[in-house]
Image 1 (cartoon, protein in one colour):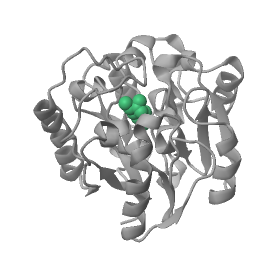
Image 2 (tube, rainbow, N blue to C red):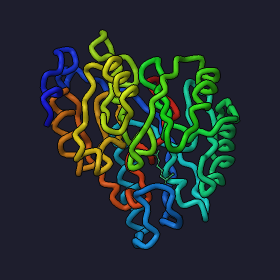
Image 3 (tube, rainbow, N blue to C red):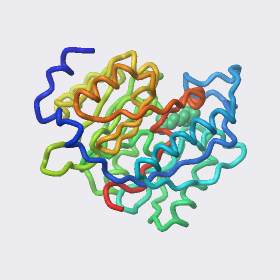
Image 4 (cartoon, rainbow, N blue to C red):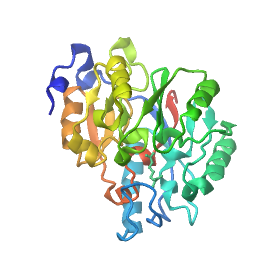
Length: 296
Ligand code: ARG
């Protein structure tokens, strides 16, 4: 555990009873056709065997856990031949009923673009077709009123102006420099996406400092002085690829250092093991796309 995390200012360490779980509506996709058929990130190895029924069982646990904690989960049908569709975070980016579609940088996943946009349209979202290349909530995160947007590996920095225009919000560009953390959601976890009651929580994040270039790290330090700096060992097991409802933080059981830091701040870590889906380079957050935050 690093010293800077133990010296958190008082308001950042509210006890668990003060942390309020905010309702979420998520989109997930059952990994019925999951396998590693190609290699588009350093975690994927075609030679390693995958166990699809096990992936489905682990995914089902995440689904059941969200429901048990009162969240709504919508499902998009998996499509044969699109093994990465389970990583729904890459399907779009949504705020207040407006869904920006994605344009993948990798041809292997371009077949997912239209099915996700069609799903949004069928389910009452206003769909915006993207122009620039970006990979949805994998690289675009809403933190309070601000949008953090990653670039460096998959999403094109040209997409950031488009995101700002579509959602009329400030977009902060962050450059990723370590190929193991090629999407923003592998290096940042949004803990409190919505302002908490009584101003107890300010929008806060957890992040892996070494995943960013110096300028981006400076921006994160300045904007989020109370952020949890996640230890390298937890980043290396994809521990940051976690989702949060403001109280429960859904994390890998391997992320033991992150778990301790969350408890110190009054969050309640909920462990879900997605080891099989890690073979495709994805974790909990990647299997989760936020359709709505806060209100039911
Ligand atoms: N195999 C997938 C890819 O490389 C994994 C996607 C991970 N998604 C994410 N939101 N980080 O595209």
